Length: 287
Image (cartoon, rainbow, N blue to C red; front, side):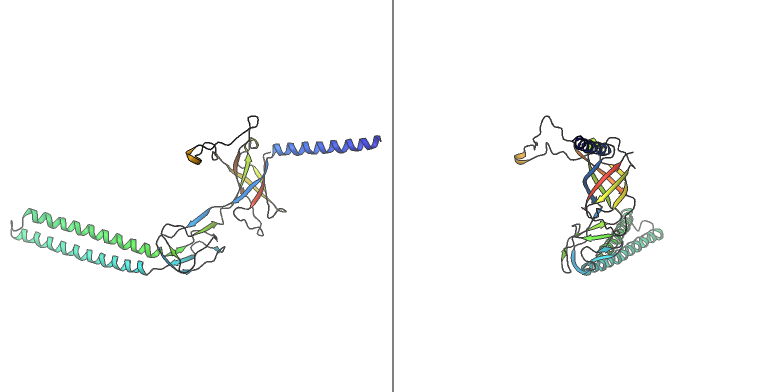
């Protein structure tokens, strides 16, 4: 009987000691299961309006920087460029005409003083300056037309992954309206949300251990890159009938808020592909 009680007591003590050690480890090295994979998402936005005549990528495809994604019908922009070039030539001709008239009047005034009034000479000089301004405007219009023609070819601004592509050849796109998302493959990081009470003594460059739910057998090493300086406030926001939203709370319980902590991975194995929104567990090693 004594041995049975002793064995039971030993098991209980061992369990309590184990729980105490785990709790101390948790206090010294905060851990959270509320983590996500994040990355910079670039909204691919055409600068001109038109119909897609060529689609070079597929949904969820990897692209390289400068690679053609899709092409917008360039015909109208080619016509606009031709018109702008014609306007530039016309402006140059008018400038030459204004210079010739002014030159003729000045020479006539030199040969026969008083043959041209001062007002006429001033007007001829103003005509030259006006023609020069018109020529500059025409040149600017040519450059704008060239840019618009160039913008009909939409390319990838960085290496990454195309996602949520819902456009096909024949679709109409509108300038400055996003068409598809491009995930920058060089910008992945882990966002861990820790209770504010766990972040005491946590500092930049602390080591971190990350486990992805999709790859739970692989522990990734990283370090704390930054700690968030603020989170959104829910109480006081405008609700129904323009009244403030106030969440009910218990007076004897103070809920700790969760602060985002950005984790930069040191190395990523080749067999693991990060995807935005994946779930992760994060542990910060403070000491």
